[in-house]
Length: 352
View 1 (cartoon, rainbow, N blue to C red):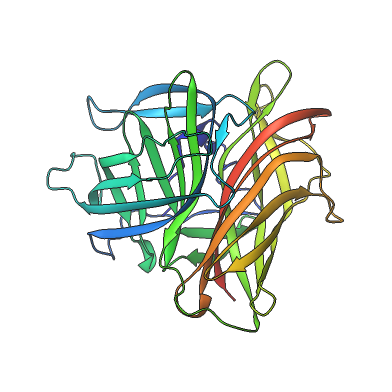
View 2: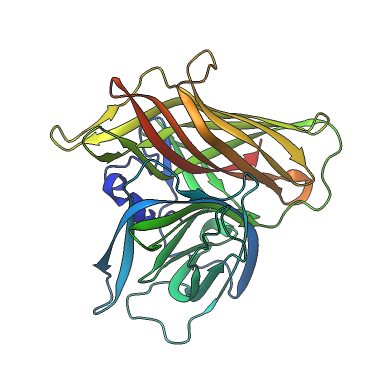
């Protein structure tokens, strides 16, 4: 099931970063299905960065318990992981003393990384945080957890809508996508997007595959000239893998990069020329790495980038699924003026 990432809540309530526009989709519903089992352990990779941020504590449904809400307020990455990302690992075990409001599959969740960003910044991580793991529709398992320092959200079940009609549901059975934020220090926060799961052990040596998928926004912000505003991307997702040439292509099409206008209470398209996110990556073993670029209808890059890294992996037997994460720092015409921005997100996909 999908549970919106706390650092996206400014727009998530309006279905923006959730990708819930009529032409896009939304996370799986329900939240009460208990089809999987605890404990679980998992590992994967994450693209992480540090930027200026505001962190506040908010009250949870459990009386007296608060969690952190870290919102991106800068458009410059002060530190970031290497292009190949950071190794992450985690576990979830049954919580023997769950809160009354904790819900199904109450778990003690741990998520850490022994790696640091290129400049030495370490993630705070989460150790035995009280949360949940959702196993909806036979999914791999989606952990959701928050503490007074950090939060982590996973999306592995996603409903695809067209014209407000449910047309498909993607259920990731071999892994899930991850979004992370922590309170950092000195007025800065740490943010990450990535994945965990069971990498394909024997990769196809030839042939091609296509994947239907979803895009889930991480954090996104742009410089308005008077401050920073949140933004998010939505659209349709399809990836293609050529196992002979070792390439991954595709990305997000029919895309809209939008912000929320509090005055009109409407979503505003920041640049109608931006119609896609183009993926270009090279396969090494069961993983791939490359770039993700905002493009126009002709596939041409819109604006410039300081970095536009993408990492991904194939999961399950015969590369049955794929997951990817991207983090972009750049400059483009947004709202009629060239502005700096940061945009992150994750992709999950199933083989057609």
